[in-house]
Every structure is written in C-alpha cells, then in structure tokens.
Amino acid sequence: MELAIAIMVAVISAATPLLLAATGELVVERAGVLNLGIEGMMLMGAMAGFAAMFLSGSHIAGLAAAIIAGVLMASVFAFLTLTLSANQVASGLALTIFGIGLSALIGSAYVGQPVTALPKLNVVGLTDLPVLGPLLFSHDGLVYFSMVMIPAVWWFLNRSRAGLKLRAVGESAEAAHALGHPVIAIRYAATLFGGAMAGLAGAFLSLSYTPMWAVGMTAGRGWIALALVVFAAWKPWRLLIGAYLFGGVGIFQLHVQGAWGLPSELFSMLPYVATIVVLTIISISSTRQKNGGGTPAALGKPFRASI
Image (cartoon, rainbow, N blue to C red; front, side, top):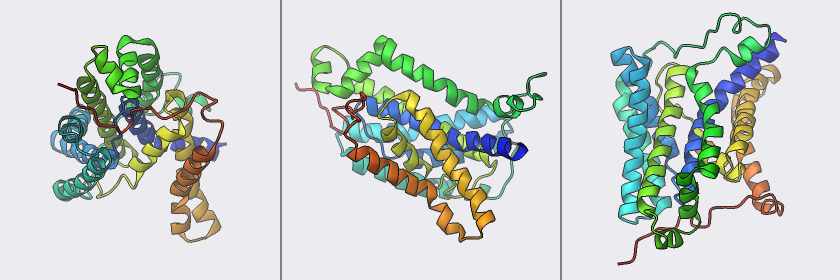
C-alpha cells in the first residue's frame, strides 16, 4: 500500500508540469494560434525561476521570474506571428531552439546548485491521514493551482463573455473582426497567457520536481503538452485525464526499468511512444467529431485586418 501511494503521489507530480503547459496551450489554440515553442518557454521559465530563487531566496520571486520569462518569450512569438504575420509553425520551432540555447547559456552558472524546494501543504489533521493525507494534502501550491485552472479555464471558455469572444476568434477571425472584436488583441492576450503557464510549468520542474537546474531539464515535456491538447480535443476536462495518463507512463518506466533489468533507454521511450500512439489513434478515429471534438477552424491561420 505504501508503494502504491508513493507511486500515485509521484504520478501527480509528474503530471503537473504537463497540465500547466497544456492548459495554457489549449487557450492559445482556442484563439486560433499554434505555438510550438512550449519547450523553449518552459526551459526559460525553469532557468529564470531557479536563478531568481537562488539569488533572492524567495519562492515568490522565483515564480514571478518564471512567469515573466514565459511571457517575454511568448511576446516574441506573438510579435512575429500576429504583428508581422510570420509563419506560426516556423516561429514556434525557432522559439524552442532559441529557448534551449539561451537557457543553457544563462543557466550555465547555476548547474548543480541546490535550492530549497517549494513548501508542501501541511494541514493539521489532514496531512497525516492514512491514504488521503499523502495523496491530497502533501503537495505544493503549483499542484493545486494546476488542478484549479482546469475548471477555471472551462468556465472562462464556456461561460464568460471574453471566453466566447476568444472562441469566436479561433473559429473565424474574419467573422469576429466583422462583429467588432479585436482579433489581434485577443490573440495577443491568449498567447501571453500560454507563455505564463509554460513558465510556471518550467518553474515547477526546477523548484519542486527536481529542485535544481540542469540544461534541457524539460526533456521533451513541451512536446508532450502539445500532444495533450490534441488528445483532449481542445476540452479542458480531458486535459486532466491526459496529463495523469502521460505522467503515469513516465513514472511507470522509472519503476519497471529497474525491476526488469532491461536497457533504460527502452523504457525512456515510453512516454513519447505513448504520445505517438495516442495521436495516431485520434487522427484515424471517426468518432471524434461525433463526440464534439474538432480543431479550431482558424488554428494556425494568420489574420490581418483589411483596410
């Protein structure tokens, strides 16, 4: 039982950065913008958050720095794609490459330096409960924040006026513009929100999951977050399932590779193989449209208001 609880707690931690990054990207894509730069934004968030925490000793400063780094990276992407109408796919890939290189350069002085991890929740009378205590009341604030953001984003997209405008922009930017909605401003706001969430996802890795900085420590999680949005068919509630599924696969390979004695590289492939399999199944599924799924119609399409 203790081993099972420990594994479930590990799955929750492994799923949190995926959930944070994918939630931000879902909002971005519902606005019709495809940002492939999540990996770069996460790395910059991880590096900036760790550096701020290391220099100031404040977790709040670390989280704030991670958000700022993610937003700055996203603003570069937004300027290129929304203001200059550059290709979104090429710009997103360039952002990832830029983030990988810049984070490695700036973070070289912090490699191997330890910091204090984000504090865990400690509720008297609840944290010490036999099973529910470690499962529900032993995590840090970012874990709970990632969970709260799912219903918050669902409400925003489906119940708020601003969310409905954002969805309208993602379905037809021209029609939304004809109705008087500020298409570029809405897409800018969505893109910057996605950058902030990616920055927080990176900060979770360097300040909580493994409280240290290492070059390339995201290890492809940004790409998995992108796949999660497709897996969820652009619906927030499905992100929760997908994030814990992929997080579970990652933890599974860590436990199994030691027990079975097979090459570690074989099991390290599992999260990415699972990503490919899921995307393949989704792409050939004929029931996705019947279940209300579907890509936002204007996803990846540039918009420039006619004069």
